[in-house]
Length: 388
View (spheres, rainbow, N blue to C red):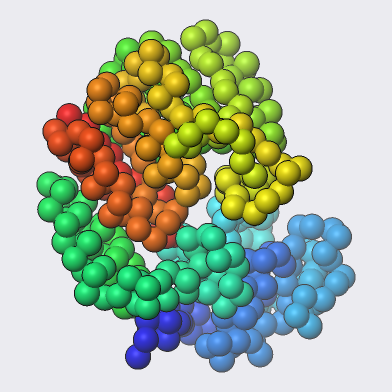
């Protein structure tokens, strides 16, 4: 059985364990957006679509319409029409949705909030079925094909062993071994075995941060990681440089920086890369905005190598630039090899990042010690930490 089929079969088996206790009940899916429609498709795959009697959604524009031939009701109407149904909440906002349900309804209706792990399995399967986006790591089907047919099992195993020899702690080895085994085999048991570390970037367990850092936040988004950094350090730092090319995100970033009222924070509306220039940019008004190989002259952004900021002497660099990590590291070669800053680098955007990034960094700074941590229940947010 190939990895694609193994992934589908093993993931459906896991999801079936969650919903099979309700196979004789009427089901109402809370939320008629992409997640809800995706869940309907999955319930069909496990033979339970005929149990779904409706969606319910707080969005008034969706109420009274049909999604995939299933009626969408307001929550109040659905609770009244289907008093004996099981109401399934399985999406990114499950906690918020549940908390907004009146207490009396919670006490008198059967409301099931699935785990975050289960929600993520459903999203992965949805991406797999819909070919969500070939450039998004969540489309696991593309990764199965890459490791099986482009790199090959033997070569991937060689790369994995080399990376395992570069990290010292057992958690790092467990993360990367299970991650690559999952993509090689498709078996969800490996993915479930990846240890998840909830705190991303700023945790003394995997990187030592002092109160006098010169911090480069490369891929600063809307200030989310800046906020985490300021919370962690109690706003104690030497200087902060923020790099974000997306117009929408940059406006939010500026607003947040202004709200902090802090000095010694510089913002730069640029992308980072190997060389200075301009390049097409795909703006999606969110976390996945990225440099694009498509020739779109209407969306051009300035690209700078981080070595232009050599005199800033960064002591800590966080790098999450949606697939431009290697180019950015090449453009920071002098800073890294001479300043030897602490690093937190995303290694999940491209197929070979898990191998190429640590090997390259080790060639620049042989003294670097590496740790790898995974921070979500999705295939996103695997981070390489490096320090002396």
